[in-house]
Image (cartoon, helix red, strand yellow):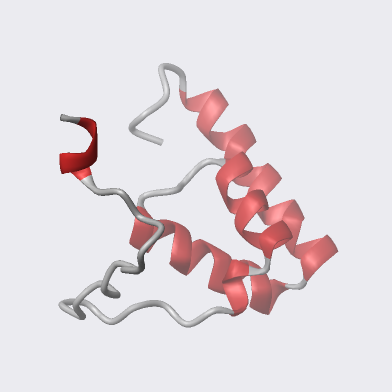
Length: 83
């Protein structure tokens, strides 16, 4: 609500997100919103995208958990290739 110029715009977005629960179910909506908060995705389109992609079913990475290592194989050129 703090990111929009007028409160009415924020209310509309909130209502649209709540309506996603009718289509996808409230449990999935809750999981999608939790993921959205964790990654900073708070708009209707972002939450809808999380639901469409099924990311709400994937586990959230724990805080402080190291990122997965980058894939390394012979087809990757690296930054030195372009110098």
